[in-house]
Length: 152
Image 1 (cartoon, rainbow, N blue to C red):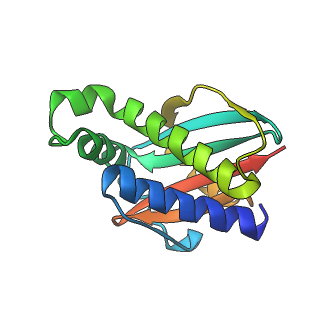
Image 2: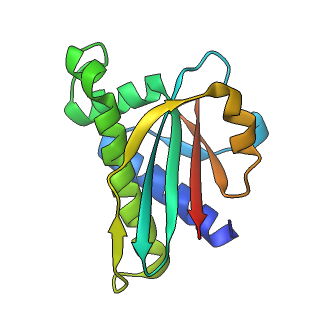
């Protein structure tokens, strides 16, 4: 991933996360991320049109639950959070992807976004994700998050 794209994805993700869920993210060195003792979830969205590609986010489940609780303004132990945290992650994905594409290409180009697809993430694939040049590493309130922005 070119440096401008990496920087844009990191910046937009941090801004959206702060504005949407009052959570804070900072770019991190991939080697500095601690993935131990975490159960992960991922969501991805495809886009076509002016450019084609995919945006994927991999987060610990506790981060997704905190995201949902903060968006809904309720405690992370609430039943609703337990049931809907994947929806919150998908909503974050929609907003981040739209903002990244607008930031990179402006408001004129037309993009079609797929419905985000959330699912579990196999922690054994963590290192393979880190090794991808299309992946940016973030630290969200002390937890590791990976962002993949892959243009075709």
